[in-house]
Length: 472
Image 1 (cartoon, rainbow, N blue to C red):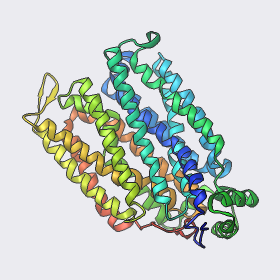
Image 2 (image 1 turned 30 degrees about the vertical axis):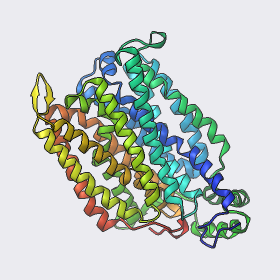
Image 3 (image 1 turned 45 degrees about the vertical axis):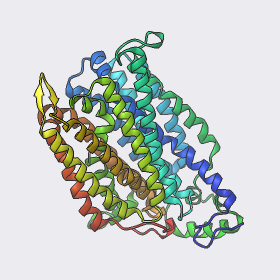
Image 4 (image 1 turned 90 degrees about the vertical axis):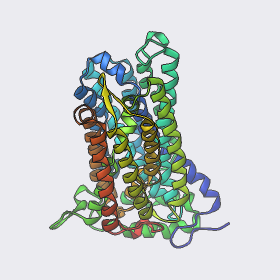
């Protein structure tokens, strides 16, 4: 039975199952994010009716989750450096559970928004900690594949919500119709989120704390036990020495570690911000959050729009599995470049299709086969995103920073990622009503084009490098 070499790249065969089980638990946080994104996709008619929302009000209500997300992402990194990765994820699971139930039952708009923000804090925290935790327990040679599972779980949660929403709508007759216990179907779309939240909370009691966090707290004996379980007894002690050497001797990790004289932030943090922000500026969450609205604007019925969401989610899951097979072979940077180019092409195709449409009774109608062209381009766009920027951004944020500043850098980059997410979600209904689909998607297409050149110039490959070898 093989043991890890000096770089920790080949853990004992028996431990791969243990690492995979840990990864499966940690990525339930991604599933929660995906499920909420998919759940809200089918509730917008219900939200408008229940709370008398304008376009701007709908955008704020949908996007209020993201207010919580960028708060949760910012504080999660620093909290994780003081409380531990696992404990903060437990708090996130509890908060998401409470938020899901409250959203389902709330009849006052302010209460609904507060519950949505609370759920967002949980999602934001889990979104940055899950990939960081996975990177800290997985060996370098499979770290990319293990962290990519985060995006698979996001899309799985998204697709699961699409399926649940579709069948709830079909069973009730419409998303605004009463269903079980006389509660409207759209409210059940929120209540169903409590199930994965409870599973996440329970499962977190069966995984160990990150050994790198334990070392940062001087709990070396506990770290050695965890490392032995992960990589085998022979590799544990050398790996412990490597981790200890990677931390500053004069202070524990702190938020100010991200700063650098003259440039405000360290170059590696700027690179992380580039990835975090442009992952959102390419517009993927417009399809996640407003897919139903988008397809109805392109002439689909509510039922057809929800079914298209399911197809999009299923195709995206397949794309993520392609990434699993490629990310540790061809690397992170090539996948980002391929994704940027593919997204730019497909987004400009959507712009062309939408530009041929005309407004009839306030609804966009596309001529001939332009509706099918738009759908095909959107599905291909989702594939390109989920082969590249979707999972690879999380992979890189989890592994690109040195141990000393990982938690603090994730706080900054996680905040920026979710804030950009919020701006996109908040602005789309307003953009749709004022400049239309074509010009809205032209903005996302230009951002995808810009992202290609930024990656080419500023992003460094991290494939196969140990976390202790990361510089910044």
